Structures are given as C-alpha cells and as structure tokens.
Image (cartoon, rainbow, N blue to C red; front, side, top):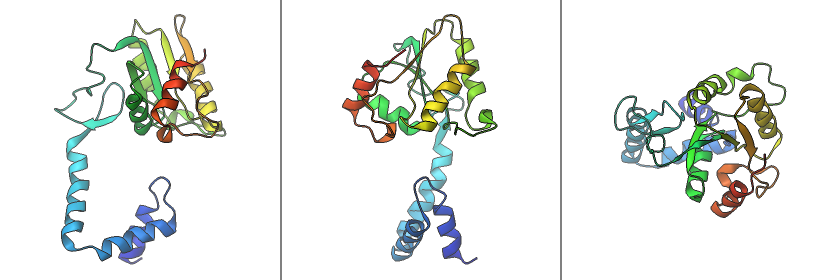
Length: 199
C-alpha cells in the first residue's frame, strides 16, 4: 500500500468521511507547502500533550495539570442535583453553548446499537454507575440522546442499568426532530428541548 492509499484509509476512519472525501484530503495536503504539513503534524502531536480526559464527566479538555477535573466539574456553583448524560463531547459543547443547563454532565462515549450484544463495551456505563453512586444529592438524570433509534435504545439501556430509589429520569423534549443529532442543533432548539424535557 502506497502512502496516498494509507493516509486515505486513515482519513476514511474519521466519522462521516467516506473514501472519496478521504482521498481529497490527501491530495489537498500534497498541494500545500511543507510549512502547512509541519504545522498539521505539530498540532496533532500537541493534541495528545495538552488535552486530558476529565476524571468526572469524561470529556476531553485543555488540562491545567495531571488528573485535574475540567472547568465544568470544578465549578461548585452548578446544580449538583442534576446530571445530564450525553453521547459525545460535541453534544456536551452544544448543550453548554445554549446557556440553559446549569447542572453537571457525563459523556457516555457513544450510543448502544439495538442489536449490540455487549453494550458495556460500547459505552462507559460502569463509570456512570460509579458517578451516580458517589453523588448523594443527585435527584435527576437527564438522558440527552440523539432523537433516533440508537438514541432511544441507549436511553432505555441507561435507565435499566442506573435505577435508584431517589432518582428521576427525564429525556429532552422533542424540540429536537426525530433523526436529529445534538451536535447540529441550534442553541434555541436545545434550550426548548431542555426546558420541555419529559419524565
């Protein structure tokens, strides 16, 4: 396999990138000068050095020190009675930009496909259970999943795995259209979905 094919194969593993678009990326890199390529290499290397995963919510953030929580989890003015569970980091960012939600988050790390035989390997369910058990003042878990089949299935799976006597589960209101992904929802839609969540 030559270097063009190898790099195309690597790009095609990115979410939403097909083989043709991956090859376009490679030819774009070939058309740029050496400085651009070096800057890209440096940026990728810095990504691993400067970014950490929060020990609480599991999101990636610019780290101030080893094992430090992210700015959201370190903020003691937020509402400790609510925990919003989202599939991915980009979903957390979308909700946070809406400015409506003031509780804490947990990034599940994906969704559970309907026919998945080992769901615990697809998402961070064990870590979520640990967080829930450690938060004594937690009252509501908001399951902010995508409005599609896998999102609905993941919602039911998390409910089954995380039941507690004093816990209430809610889902975002359907200001989100069916099939929509949180990442692409505008702040006003997310605000309405949060305000009209159902239990």
